[in-house]
Image (cartoon, rainbow over all chains, first blue to last red):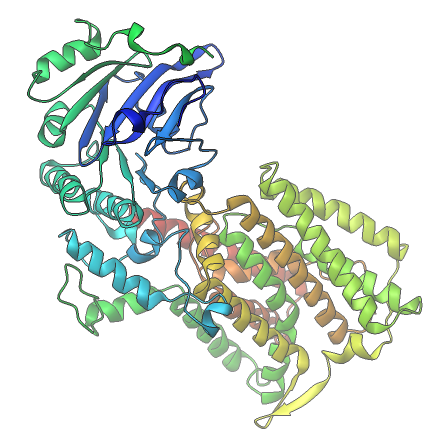
Length: 277
Length: 331
């Protein structure tokens, strides 16, 4: 299989690559949000995505999950070129996202939120009448939260009665429950206290190790990223400027690359010619 | 039920759950209803008569039906100020057609189609053009009211048709007399209650009112759901128009003047939040009966009808204030 520019598709090079973005460009009027950004996510890894405010991390993952349609660039899932025109497209292919504002309906209970937009109907005649199997959904939600060892007061609780960390847990559980290829998390620890952060980081490891799903973890909290990430991608000015691991670079070095104090290790020339729109 | 997981369903019957019952959306309105009932039973000798209670239900039929449509719209964080106007249009259309020689059934179906069409128009403007429901329905109220007067040339006229007045026919049920309209209204409540609480559509209605952006992100078809809500409400207003002709076989472009205020009041007193996403349909039924009991009781006491509007206005503001207060306490 070849791509639009005639080069071999990524799968031919590396079967381990689950999700790849190449030369993603996104403009908003005069503002360049993404300026030929790349990303490679491998099987079984947590990829930390770091960058200063406005570096394009959130924009890039919005492209990866279909919430933003890029002006140019290519996406590959399992080596096959894909195009997302809405979050639904990405979800159908198994990419689940935990948005920064969590996308929870706070007046609904936990199970309703986990199955929101993907409610399960009864089998048979009641399903024909489009009636929901609430008992099944509640039981499944309860069992899954148990599997993730994430503690919540009661599955019947309304989300608005939960703490920030518990809400985060519900949103993460929802993504992990439905994802089959990739879980993306946008700043899942930004608003959390120390204990709750530890719980969420635990959840991320469990999704990688127990569910076997690769995770893209966006954060600007270096210690959090260095605790869970297998590899770290540094964004700056809408581009990938460095790709490293917590072993190769220290937190201070990554921060220096983030702020532009030192150059990254990914050169612009490495990108192919296909990225010019 | 196995509950050894991380989560344990919390269904006790302790003091806490009793307290919670007192603050659940339907319990408060029931207390208010009982309070008004008690007051009017003492203040008048006629309120508690079975004949009068049956009349209260019959008087509830129109606002009660309109309140179903109003509820589903308010649940999406919208509002419908055209509800009365659309229902009146339904009565005028159906009445004119019948008087022009149309069959009752076809006249009725055309009227339903037209009220559904008006609802669909509101839905398109709200969902596709993202205009505020308040403005859309206020504009539609003006348009629909003017159109109704143009069709009827400003005057009221009698409607003499069996099907049109059928919902006002009495039947005896368990010793009490009621009308087909009352039974149909209860059936509509049951149907829409199931739709709201037992189907994905209902969940989506709540989620959109609660957090429209979240609804969009989780893949709920927000625009189409909103459209269906307004269109369905339009159909319900058409049915409300049918019930109105059953109560008074007269199509009057100036009728149902208080239906907007009454239906919103019924929904809000019933515990549904004007901010959307919270509330329940049964509350709207209780709220409707509260509004009706209020008007009925004050009439029995011989008080000027203008006071009824005044008290209803006070009631709706009090209910919204209570909702606002309870929302702030949640934070």
